[in-house]
Image 1 (cartoon, rainbow, N blue to C red):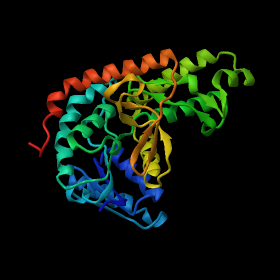
Image 2: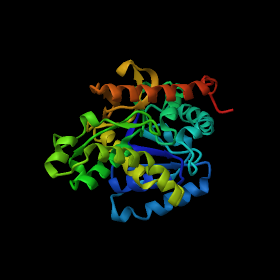
Image 3: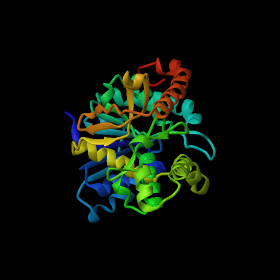
Image 4: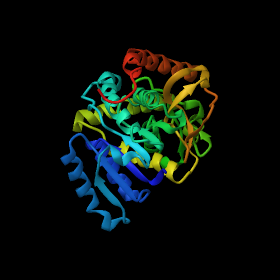
Length: 323
């Protein structure tokens, strides 16, 4: 039986540990299990984070092994090689697919029937790999996708337009990476288009603003990695947001990585599109009407990701227990 109040984190590096810390504070779960190839690291992180329970709500936080996934509602995977300065997310692909060939059979051999949330990069490729290696229905294999990129877009727009970012409604779609793009045709501030809002507020160069912000969003991760070698706080909050939507069955619209099967004229590739997320995982993909330029950008992302997937086909065809 699936325990929706139990989450398992596989990978206890900077990202995994920050996610567990964020989830502890959220009080979404009554049980959080940490799994890592370095068991002492997992124990240390569990001890450190659990010492803050007195300031949150009572829960169990502990180190475990793959036996713990059997009844988990959500298994989050952050394990994998780290992205190096100036290394694209797609450069990581083969290293991390090979790691996932070890992880996914270990999880599925325990009878796991919950939801996978993939966070490790390149997230779109690895989400596709998890779906193929696990055999679970596509709606129960989710990638963190461009949820953080979308938050960055709202943040930059809010800052530049001097308005609360929570009143900015906009999406980043496509690959979580260099070919991602903002859907400017649907972006608005409380129902007012970006062009009109700029005109109302006296911001004279709307097109220049959008170009600068698009560049800033795409460069954000690279700049953070260059300065501090890793990104983890922002993605930890994005993971918490996705878990909230699942555990509370919020039916929230989030740009998670989803398997595309005919939507937008695209087949058999995982990328980020607006989805309704609830207790069943991805409950529906929303068919936005994109501009011609945006539709072409989405197809370009799909081509890039599909070519990368093809390079991993041999790896993904080998299901079963770890070698």
